[in-house]
Length: 218
Image 1 (cartoon, helix red, strand yellow):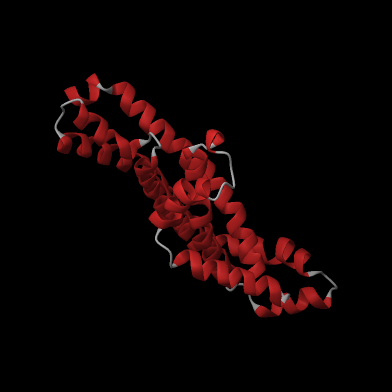
Image 2 (cartoon, helix red, strand yellow):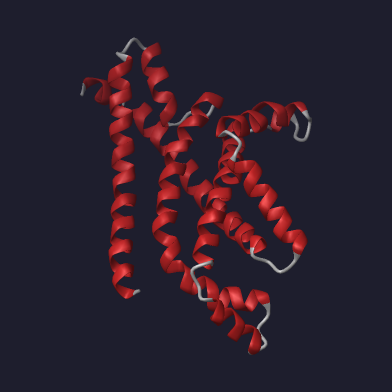
């Protein structure tokens, strides 16, 4: 307990950055992932091909390599001025691009649960592809999408710890900071693990609640 009390500011700052990283990346990957899912079911071959290639490449690329690209290769390519480079922004981009591929597949699986007859009826009524998705498909797919989407968000929350290896002062860096100050590394790890459980439990309860509620509604 002394480790926690004596270093409360370190824990607050670390987990504060973790939550910030999670929330920003979570919102962005939900938006990008949904757009990718729409592209994957689009009647336009170019959009479908782009969505398929993106998801295939990103899902089969380790997240650490994605971080490496934005943290090291990105500045070396001089796409952005080194003086203006921000590791936190790079972490947000890496997590967003990586997780959006998984969000895409979750949304696409939800879209596939909607009966084909409803799509045909929408076309018969003269609705465009966009109108069909927004007014018919996505509202119904939400029931199937939300529970597995929570699992994807939980994975995103835990993946934020990788940012600690790329100069982002978040929860994953707490152990190293405590070790440098002479504290037992295992004690620091146990406290970090405990607070991650505290963050994940509400998401897990939300997932179970939605599964229970919507399994009855279906």
